[in-house]
Amino acid sequence: MNVLTEGVELSHADVALLAELAKGVTVDRVGRRLDISGRTVRRRLRGICDRIGVATAIEAVAWAARRQLI
Image (cartoon, rainbow, N blue to C red; front, side):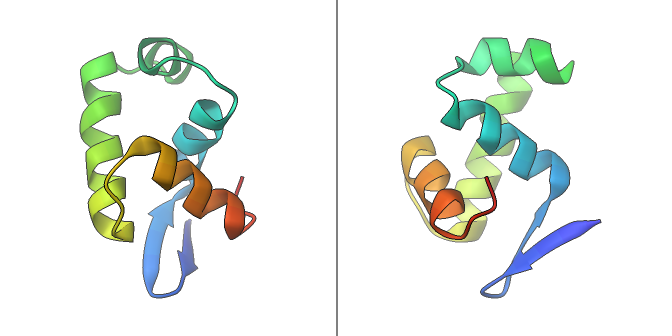
């Protein structure tokens, strides 16, 4: 299932990734928690940022928080 907000669709896995980052967890630790590599986390995060139109992970977390996704 996906979350659709303002024409942008994020998977629950994307939202979970942003939620972990919002807790202050490092990218590598997020990868370990989600059972994926840190490199995969970075690639997915870049895709999320591109889809929602922001430049950084911090902006992506703020975007999700403003929309009460995390």
